[in-house]
Figure (cartoon, rainbow, N blue to C red):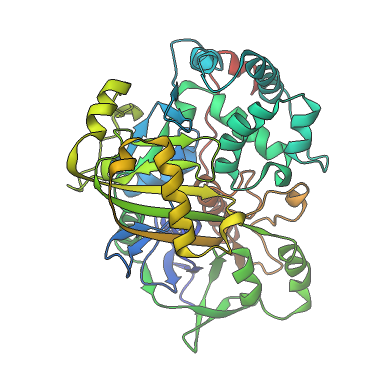
Length: 490
């Protein structure tokens, strides 16, 4: 039977960010938490593991956060890992051939703080910038409704040039939303623009300085130090909710709890739900969701190929380069938050040329391709050959470097697809059963499929549990407030 209501028990299925956020929030609020994770490590899709083919610890896929991710930042601060995040003010766009353009903030008020950099983009013409400026102004100053059209349709309506679409909108939005422009609902694209332009700190990019799973060991310690438990290699086969408690079938046996949170992907949830009439509407909604893939290509070279810690790559299949041998903190100490100040070195082309000539200093880079539908059917070697060929177009230092080893990680169902109309099917945290709740970035968080959306869903589910237990709590952190002129637009 479930434990005494003096310390209500909560079972959380899934050790991704949504489940961890809910577990930590409830552990700190008088609940006895048991978290079930079928794998031997935490993090879900934001995890890392020792790759058997290379012997290296690799991230499932590179994950980044931004200053606008208020709940994710609060979660990291709560479990004490914010010092493991390195913050960058600069983004470097690299064209084939190696020419670079830098986006960085100035003293001007938001949203004008990046205007000087924007006007200096070498890869856009004056007309490209004029039409882009008009479209950005519309997105930042007006609300956008989901009228069934895609953002690609919206771009055509607002006269965006082919270069503006290919060299600005696609690199920004496909990476942020993990989907092609003709599959993105207009409000999601608008949200990315508004959130990134709210304030100077909104677009600061944070990158973990340790392997992803190492971040979330702290979440396990947070839960267990408060009387909870984290049970690895414990897959939950089914859930049987009732009015008084909830039963989970785990490793062939039944375990009862006062409350439960299913923090699993939408396709996994359908398999957990009981085969009852009450579940039919939720299962119908889950069947509407589609997924989009992300591919990570990990390459190890015998010498340093670039001094850049990261870069946006234009006009080719590969979209982002993360220089992991620069980003990862081999000492494990991380980089202190210090008010979220940038730790990125200022690099001029001459400095980079000298750095790339350095033989004997190895480079480990991860290349990321979001919405990588074109790569799903390609072999590992085909993808490596493609990535290596393209990488050498961007970085001269890679042309003379020898590839020591490589691997490809395909996350076929990486994110839910933010297609027009999908918000009608994103469920709230509540279910037809009063003691079972949902968490996951695919639930109705108001955000797309991001780490921020996952943490928000976990906090919302934890709030729902607390309300049901008669002890209302607020875990959700407010959005980042606009500064400068953005204060006028909410």
